[in-house]
Image (cartoon, rainbow, N blue to C red; front, side, top):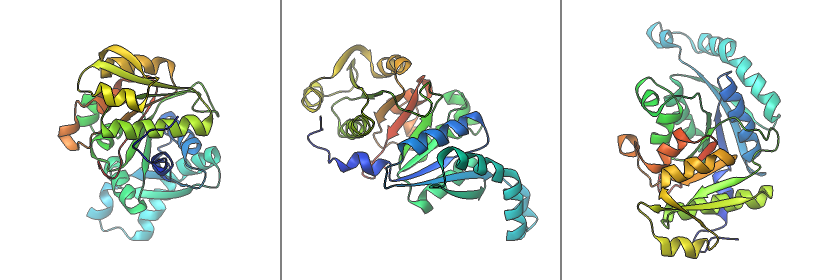
Length: 268
């Protein structure tokens, strides 16, 4: 199975330079585990831990003092994550609010995918009180994976689902889903909701085996997430407040499974 209009390399490219936010929580541990599974065999993986040393700039701390404080507070998080994903990963200590620190690091690192855990915040609280996953979905220029606990420990993903609508961005999401299905030899569900902004002709051409759902896209994909390890959706390239309420953003926050929002450089 292969999409007609998207190069096979789209799937590989998404997992070439993977940046993971770790924070010592169960959510951060899950993010590291899933990132370690998904990073391309020839790709690179960086584990990043951010601590906001708000007094550092106000009191003109030295670089040595800042580094020492970061190592004491966040070093154990990185040490634990390394034991989960292996010595292949590199580590990075960051000083700053987690969202902005990860965004800045994703640019420096040239990340093709940012992975963060879900702490169960609502969409509104992610926007208003500084949660990390929500702002990254709105502002990152690369793909974002919101990791949730999986029952397939060590063998993630056991199955994959993808939502399509006939658009160019959904074609890319489909290419990524096919890549993972083939790479891990796991089942793939392709879902198209009949209600909403869609191009059924192109969708059926790209995926003749598509499953139709007689409801809206968010409802269909959230329902499918109850029986899948990984839900994949495309992003139409909206950023900031324009992205709030988009299908990809709503699915990422409401799904029961991990959600990968595919954003190519062309849409970023």
